[in-house]
Amino acid sequence: MFRILGFSVFITIVALVVAFLYGGPAAALTTLFLIAVEMAISFDNAIVNAKVLTKLSRFWQQIFLTVGIFIAIFVVRFILPIVIVMLTANLSFSEVFNLAINDTAKYGEKLNEAHTIIAGFGGSFLLALSVYFFLEKDRKIFWFESFEKPLQKLSGHAWLPPLIVVGIILVLTIFVHHDTADFIRAGIFGTLLYTLIKAVLDFAERFAPSGKKHVTGFPAFLGFMYLELLDASFSLDGVLGAFAITKQVLLIALGLGVGAFWVRSFTIMMVRRGTLTVYKYLDHGAHYAILILSLSLLVGAIVKVPSALIGISCIGVILISFLASRKLNNSQKIS
Image (tube, rainbow, N blue to C red; front, side, top):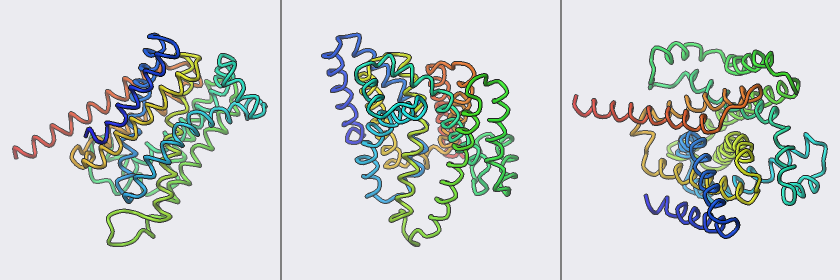
């Protein structure tokens, strides 16, 4: 476990030292808080990552840890928000980059103005993920059977999951009083993108080498790209939440970047230890947490939802699923 988590511990210490040298104890404490918030909100991301990564070869697992962490920190948490501001504020990349470096308060304002689009896209993408999980026809394990089993009976209709997500978006649109068209477009785009990616992944898995435990080649590449898109959907609102805590881009980069390291370390640890096999309801808990997170993102276009409340709710659901899994394991040992 230390070999897997040790580097994240080291990076955390380095980040806190850099923050301390940059702005003293207050900056170090802010960075630590950002790391904790990122870990709390994204722990369900680690569980879903582990579910996908278990299917990939050792090579692609290493790519996830190396190339993937570069994409997660530099592309998703730094470049992507700049691109979003560039598109929504009709500014050039260099102008937005200059704001991010030299006028962080103004950059935070511009990014916050794009919140409706971010909420629509990220919320719909994650909501589609959770809806597809609950309607999955091949799932054999149920946590809340009275709720989950009837939903599975609807799995024969391929058009139903995206229709449910778009329906929820349209209902929420009634209460969105600004950038309504952008919210609808972003929501539909997020829904269709997830639906397309899932369809491509399901199709690619048919061509995975038979008789092998792990997926390689092009199907593995698609799985890797799916993980990166998933990470982007989880992290975008975290970037907005970070600007509510501090306007210092360096501290935000340190906090969210180290949090991304921890998410990947947890993912690898769960893959190596077979955590999802041992704790059978943990996957369910993650998807219930994703459902909470996605609805919080969508509702965030109407009213501000505190990041702390989202984090506590998500971690709480996952903890309950973990305890329920342990209870199930103990009952099976006794019987």
